[in-house]
Image (cartoon, rainbow, N blue to C red):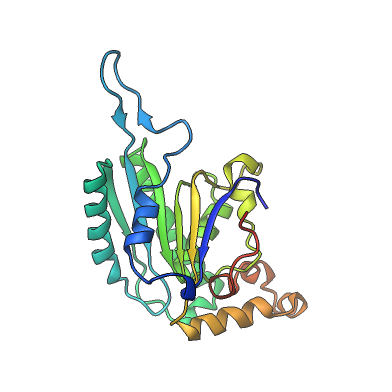
Length: 239
């Protein structure tokens, strides 16, 4: 695992379910290295670095929670004096468990995020980007980071992740970043493990436990390899 990597993981029994803590983890986390403030003219006080937060919903979900959480993020940022420029709700319609099993459908949801990320980055080129993702949204974030070199995320919050326990976070951590085709994480990761969404948890546990030989015979190894029970059993790579 990556030395010095800031990865916080909370089990359902060890945390109180609330939005305040992850919201503060997003917008009150450390600023990106070397970019706490934007450049200013000589003799003027440096401007606070702008921030943007992306909210990505998951399986069996229309994303209604994004409105309430977005309002909470705006409030926390205002109280903390953070220059929050936008809270972007990434939506791709109702996403069933059956669609989740199809690599083409999962890739479609990833493209929805990448399109909005590119548009938002063009509008706010100096902004630090953070991501809060739930369920399939965690796959979207992980897949985008693994395969898109223009994606850079500072703080990443995962709720009920569908990613594999051995997801390669160390490849994305800035000090270890070596692969030119991949994005990077410059801040911290927090993962809250799920307690109530057991159908998705069971589905991910089964997928993560499948023998790779079976997946090879199905011809879909690369599409399935990073799915699993990290959001239920915890990630192994976190320190």
